[in-house]
Image: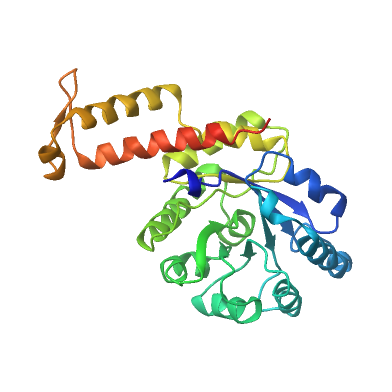
Length: 290
């Protein structure tokens, strides 16, 4: 993890038919803004929403901002999705978020319409999509996986946040096996329940997920706080990193254990995790809004 590739922590959804909110979203502190053409937009407003998004992407000065702009298009197998993809090919956002992906062929269809080089973030919103998570993640155009938890709740009759533990673990493993970044969490729909959002983020973090989508600016700082390493984690990681630095180069190269001052032993994977924690703490801290 490097300073030039800081991880995205919070993505903020903005309805495509509310162009007056686009710039405000850019200034919200989110790492990426997702201009939404799908669920947040009523059918009668979808064409106007697409016009708004294309106009914004065409006019923005992306080189002057750190914030990425992604677009959630409509499902690629439908007429509306094809129209979205054709229009987005002319402006090339920083990524396309594709709902209802169920196979690598769905990704092929998006790439054929949008063009190569635009990262594809896949939303798995059905049992079939989750079952095919590994082969979808392995597609060369795919940047990330995420769950469409509202659709999965309906299809699988799930109840409660804990019901998603296995599904979340499934896409964490599929992402890691394909060399992708850890998947971000789906949006938390109760925008007033910041304590519940924070607790849910911690549960996702325990499962290996990283970052989360937001549907209101007030959720962004909560998400960032939840995924930032704690002071205790940073102190522990610094102790490990310093011990590793003081160990002999030969021992480190050979994968041998390193003794800490309190008598505990650590090995190379623990050192790698500690260095990742320190880089993450620095990255998130450096990019706090304000």
